[in-house]
Image (cartoon, rainbow, N blue to C red):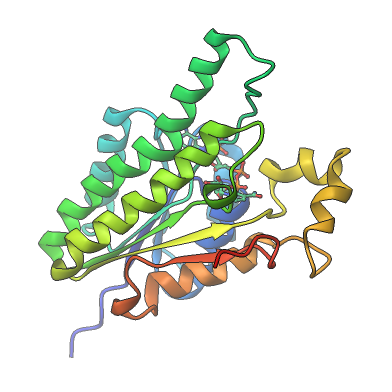
Length: 253
Ligand code: NAP
């Protein structure tokens, strides 16, 4: 009997934080992982070294650049011969208080945030789906945010990008179910990563912690547990679902 081919997962933004934890969980579950990063090569190497199993590889790309997205998926498929899971995790958070920034700054942050957090994942999904359809199926996991539902006082582009990613994923869930391609999203609240350090250690810490009945925010590993489950185990009829992991700090009804 031929041995089953290990699944291949591309995890964007796997050099640090949530992406690194997801890469580690997927590798521990037997996937070969395409560890993607943007600027932080040393951290990405560290992620690669930390993965269980063999056959993983590093890939650099700016997801805000459409041509770089095409190059990334092409390189992953060339290296592994297939692509079963895309985790759209890479993202940026930039403050741009409407009452404080110039119009030029406002435009710059909006463009950079939307390009990185929404158009990039959409382009990667397009490219991955072409390969997955040839293979007969696949899974997309988008990392969005609680911000998509509650808004962000001084980061409206971030909140809008994540709301867009939610409905983008749900649109693909409808479009691709018949192709055995399932699309899930995780909407985290605060998670202990570089992105959250300034807030979790700054003057707003007490206010943030007061939102959390658990008395703490989530760890990257807790988000990664859910992502790995979606990548391998989540039932097909769950396609289109957005799962909140925010410690009951913000509950949608
Ligand atoms: P993080 O620690 O700041 O890491 C961000 C990752 O994204 C890094 O791997 C970075 O690569 C990559 N990245 C940034 N810009 C990129 C670009 N233009 N092209 C390609 N890669 C790029 O962030 P995190 O906290 O782990 O966040 C991961 C995801 O969870 C993000 O989508 C974020 O919005 C979401 N999220 C986070 C929180 C939180 O509290 N931390 C809450 C809700 C949602 P380099 O290292 O190479 O720069």
